[in-house]
Image (cartoon, rainbow, N blue to C red; front, side, top):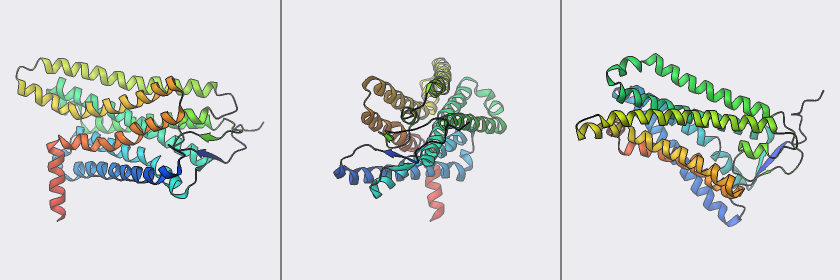
Length: 309
């Protein structure tokens, strides 16, 4: 019996965001700038949390893991896009496409799980402050991060493996700037029923489940903040959640907006352009959101650069 992943193809074509030649230099400069800002900004967050002993807390431990996930997340798509623009080629190999899709799913899942873990950390800090140091001990923090990595890896590996069972015959143009799972599945000429079921189940479970957990955590946080008598106490409690809540809203708002709009319009190029918001813009903005209003991060970065002089 022949394996179904012995496909007749060796490559896909990534159509990118635009096929207009005059727009390619602009797109190259724009995405190169965004990529460099993303990598540099998130690296600074990681350096700040490592270098300053005052930031060796669960909140900043999770934040440094989120920053690492964001660097890897954007690195799965943008560098290949930049190479294709520079070489004026749209080609991505079959193996390269599957690999890119696998790592994209992995780091997207890791992003989601880390945001959920950070919501739980804020829930314990505000709703059970007296038990915070006992509950959020180093062992539990490490286990939560490890569990996030394992669940992200299991999801991406399983979805990639069942894509390998598909056969691709013709029409191998992907109207996107990376190998997005849904786009790849719909290019197959074999039955994709199992892939569709797994994909939608994964979105519901790994997208809806963490979101429900985040919303539950913040409903409890809001209830706890309302019981605080002083206005200063309320502000201090809310300020510790504001950055995380902003990142969660940005990530889920843009990603849900992309998929809802794409299902409504069925315009692949519009969907690809909208996907830039959660695949590139959100990871780029995260360091700014966490650092601009965070005195601890700004202080750690100032001390770090002064020490280098």
